[in-house]
Image (cartoon, rainbow, N blue to C red; front, top):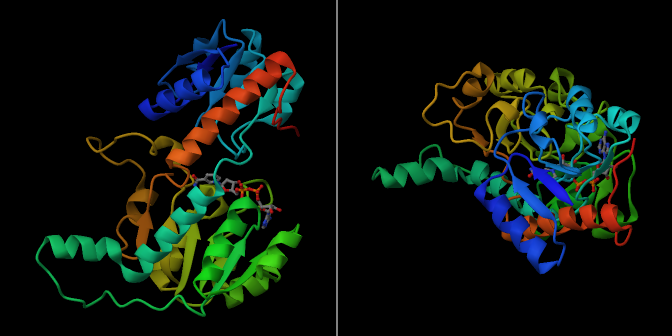
Length: 332
Ligand code: NAI
């Protein structure tokens, strides 16, 4: 297939070209740096398939332009599909496929990295030592052992993360509208959302973003949490009401905040904006807190994950084109 691949970086080219050659797919891959949106959708003219990433915009307008140009398939280089208007895709006869699992370990391990950095203030210690400041004042942490970790969403990533925290000697409780047996076998204790908020020392979000989870962590949820709670979001930015969280940081309700995702990240993440003036005042305020660690959506960014993403993405295209192999379709 001829595939127009949007939002590509050097690493995407490398892993997709390798997977194309090693898997014997022979797709024609055309790499575009542009983010997919109404202005850039015309670049896909003459392509049968479009490959998109998390901050590409696949709303009705964009999908209409793609369909009108003869695009038949959207292959997502992601597990999440909240950025695709599936209703519009179905109306236009566009098929959508994703990478349902590529490495739950990558995101779960990055979640642990955020927790460790926040707890022991590694980000501050690193800067201090380089300045010749070896004082420990302000760096006091706590043992993770026997602390209660609340996991929202016990899917693939949530379960791997639970296993890690159980390994550290934590009590792991979870909320998920669809509890699963594997979690129970791991030793996770299911509780209500309210109990999770009230009992957790650390809360980590691993649910998808959808109409039910948009601003799940709002003012009321924050008020129900333990004072000084550690909140971690490696899932999707809009699961948290960022403005409410800033109030929570100012009042001390939130003692630590670790983010790998941000509500308005599409204007920021994956680009080098170091030479520009930051225009997002909410994000700028978050950066002023010393008990906040933010990474730019890098949870997925391991060699293993990129290899698997590239492989499954091209397998989806091959399955669509030939009718053989697994097609990981996303439907309404
Ligand atoms: P999954 O589909 O295996 O698991 C999601 C779990 O959330 C399911 O058990 C589901 O029942 C549960 N859930 C649904 N609605 C819920 C609600 N209202 N409250 C609590 N739980 C709810 O997904 P997976 O692979 O574990 O990924 C989770 C999320 O992680 C993805 O949706 C994506 O947004 C995010 N992600 C982030 C990455 C990063 O680089 N930071 C990379 C990959 C995924």
